[in-house]
Length: 198
Image (cartoon, rainbow, N blue to C red; front, side, top):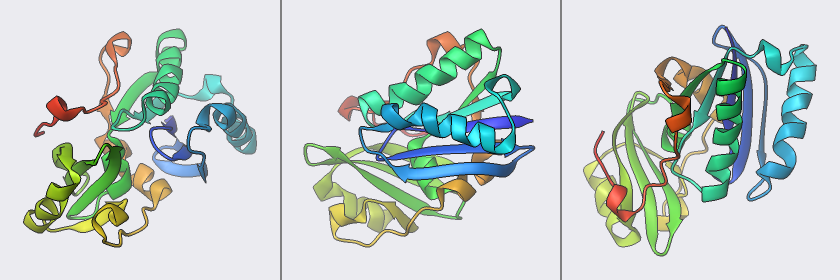
């Protein structure tokens, strides 16, 4: 199985090519609000590096949110095109899963602007709670949900551990959720009224 992972939801451009679950090529670079300028160039470079073409891709995995409106739609639109035009299987993980990977217990916080944060508690790669909270409530959430902190710890004056995105992709591929109807796939923007337990 030849898989392409794409994440353009947040500050980074993350592209990973895997074959039978093993990483064969990857790129991780900060490209906040510039993913659309660099994604296709970087993707072609990776494909050339391993001697693949887009036609070789059998599975596309993307992050479906939370994240920036434009960033989320970039990878998602590309995945939809491959899913509908090339009959490629499309799967998703959350942006917060990507940050946490499969550590036993983890919390992820990302800036949602307006004094709010996207927050998730993840256990062994599975999200047990994900939502949006006022910044002043995040510290209490972290106290109530023990785990390694990832993301933007500076939001609550804490130091977050750096995420190993490429390894996390390899670890999370088996947990990615298949999309039954690619046409109906929409980003998880997660506004205030979208906070939910999963």
